[in-house]
Amino acid sequence: MMWDGYGYGMSNGFGGLGIILAIFWWVLVIVAIITFGKWVWGHDRSSHEREVGEERTPLDILKDRYAKGEINKAEFEEKKKDIYG
Image 1 (cartoon, rainbow, N blue to C red):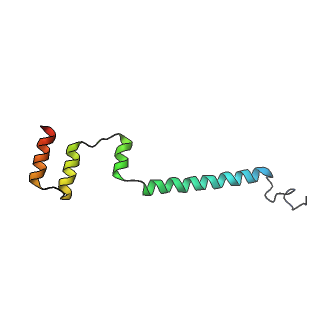
Image 2 (tube, rainbow, N blue to C red; image 1 turned 60 degrees about the vertical axis):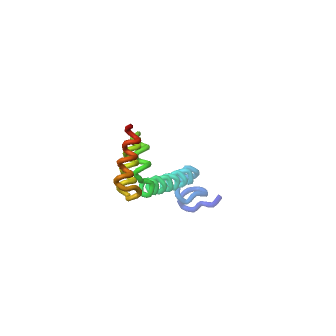
Image 3 (cartoon, rainbow, N blue to C red; image 1 turned 45 degrees about the horizontal axis):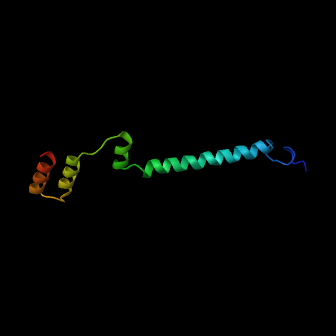
């Protein structure tokens, strides 16, 4: 091995520990990027409802369909009667 001014064989002076620290650092960076990406792009209402344990009732689904215009007022009232008897 040659003397490079910092130690034998490793230029950072930490020897094998420097390589381990460098690998650990890059693993942390990659995990942080993945976590941030999931946080930014993974926030949709349905996954949030599942996380906090909220369950949508049939009436909630019916209201959403009415609000989106998938069903009209008469259909909404008819289906609401079917749900609640």
